[in-house]
Amino acid sequence: MISLAQTLVVESPRHTPRRIPFASRMIGAVGPVLFLALLVQAFLRQGVAVWSIGIAYILYDTALLVFTAWNIRGLRHAPVASATTPTPSFGVIVAAHNEAPVIAAAIDRLAGQAESPDLILIADDGSSDATAEVLSRRYALAVPALGDITERSSVLPSLRWLRLPHGGKARALNDAMLQIDTTVVLTVDADTLLEPGAIAAMRAAFAAEPELVAATGVLAPICGPDVQGRLFQWFQSYEYVRNFLSRHAWEQLGSLLLISGAFAAFRRDAVVAVGGFDPDCMVEDYELIHRLHRHAVDNGYD
Image (cartoon, rainbow, N blue to C red):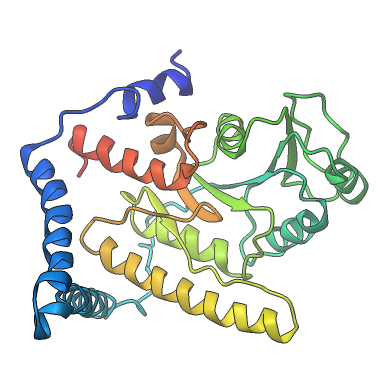
């Protein structure tokens, strides 16, 4: 049986480089040349030409805003699953490293979902704080040996605990992925608190679209209650909403390149087929989406 690591070597362009098309090389070359040409205008020209690079940026940003506005027109329409479409089984992986102060709140939010997941798996990435104490005391889970997984919790039957040596988030997610057999797997950060209908919405989306491979939702930051915290939260909220709206717009063209790992759902078989998350990549969620796109093109799925 081929391991995830072996599959990753085959599927990742970092390990197995692909031929770069001529058109891609030209696009990559034109960008820097155009930037330098506009920048030079500020030093060699007079009048309006001095502002060439600023004007070009404003026009580019305006074009993106128009593009986004046009493509989010139907955003309010929720997915509707056919009455004959089977509801996919749904598992959640919570990758955690030293998250004792927040992990119980995250688990309780998952347990309180309108539609509960079939499995909640804590991928404990070598925590050295009180994470083990929280899981054993609050959820009656016996501390497993490194590399082992517990039986289901008597307090919360959907909850299990996979205890791993510290190797990074991507490795923890990969090890957990091999322990799950649900159709859809949702990855959630330990400091992410889901709205009560989050999993129901995800499950409905995958049921409505059998070819859907990956999906995400809108994240909202939670900062401190003081003035500074509220100010930062306002700016972050604006940035998050803008980013998620633009991602929805690109998704309409089949060009979505980022699904936030803090709340990301995947068809498990698709993730395994491309080798899982790259342990040596600092942006494993971003890189995985690129690999899924490449795999779809190479195999005629897209």
